[in-house]
Image (cartoon, rainbow, N blue to C red; front, side, top):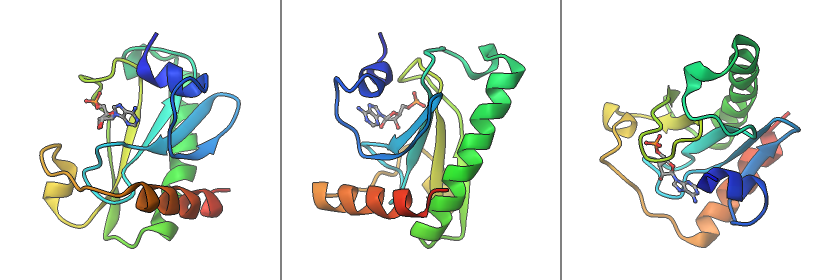
Length: 129
Ligand code: AMP
């Protein structure tokens, strides 16, 4: 069972920003930039292109909605999107408020307090529709 399935099942905490029957979005715990969010299908699949085309399109649709909320909540030049999965083998889309190229490289990290994570998650969630 992946660490993200444990979050989905409520066995591990997360800073949740959005959820429906098939997807969940929560803040990355080790963010590249403030507001770095992960969008995760509840169905545990390892690789994104092992999803069916319908599941893939639904994931992109949900990610679009999360990105719109993120753009409103976190001022930035643009939202960058990336899919990797080398660390957690459960499909997830990284949505990253980006100002400089280094924001999209997974070497530059920002440290946030619990309070900052909570405030960010609340702000993104309140803009989600
Ligand atoms: P990757 O699998 O390489 O796409 O990266 C996995 C991402 O998941 C990394 O950016 C981690 O910081 C993030 N991550 C790992 N565990 C957690 C967790 N418990 N809650 C939120 N994000 C996590």
